Length: 302
Length: 85
Image (cartoon, rainbow over all chains, first blue to last red; front, side, top):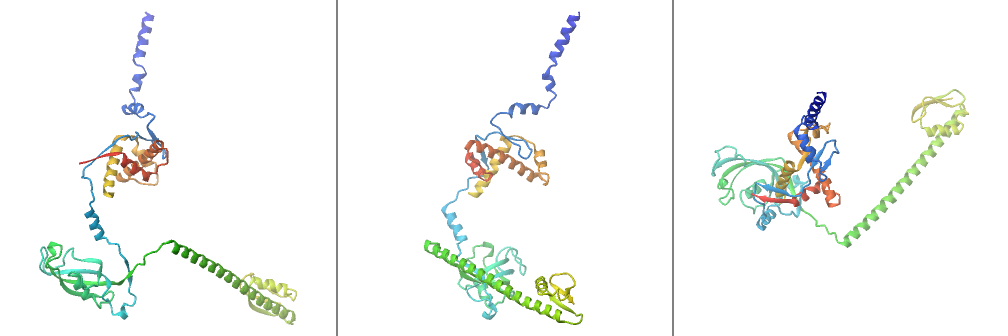
């Protein structure tokens, strides 16, 4: 009987074995335990975070767009729209004496417009939305298409920060459809008057480079000589000051030695002066300084 | 081409985050940087950065040279089989 009981207990123990114990764990951790720990996985725990990434063998990517292709026409239009400038803009410093904006200048302007007639989608005598610009670099050139030629004509003679109002019209050939044949009143404020200064092309040929390095060397040597001169100057000045101080100190000591009555005088002295005065027999004569030593006003007496 | 690269990079990122990342504790990742507060986007970006660093290590062993994260994009672009729709 006891033997049978033992067998039943043993069977029960076997059936509720370790496998059942593990069923208490969350399912994911068990799956990860088997799937992740392959030798090919890479683990990054540099920041205390476990990052496991499977090795990337085959990346299949779908992009919901057509491939972007660039034709030579695109390149041409881009080059046309963004030409390489052979000039840079510089402020016209003497625009007052020149009489304001001159032909050939570039006027940097802020402008707004009021609709007068023509076009589509504009209310009369109202500000035209979107037909305004800040920091517009207007070339003061009368040969360009309208309305910019009118802009150029009207801006000639305008000073900096001066506002000009004039009427101009967009021609029939203007590329924007709704702006064709629009007549508008423009209010233009000239912010800056600038001129085009051609950019010098850099020549980096060998000869030039060598010359430049030679010039640099020479310049370096000059500065070195200069610094030597400056140091020499400083030394001479210090020497002069020292000599003067010594004479003064000796004079003072002499005066103190010869003075018969107790004397007190206020002097400006330096540490060097005190040192020299003491060496010159200042103390022997009974002289002494009051106050802290150093540069400043103090008294000495006998 | 730059525009196209941006699209490819985005698609590659999605693909890797979906299919290749086996284990990445998002909460722990953001908490590991104590000085920063992460929103949804920046948190995702930080996780992606961690994944990129991990892939860098993979590539270093594969190619036998040092791979920087900035170079990794091009490597992934080269690996990708792109289908335009």
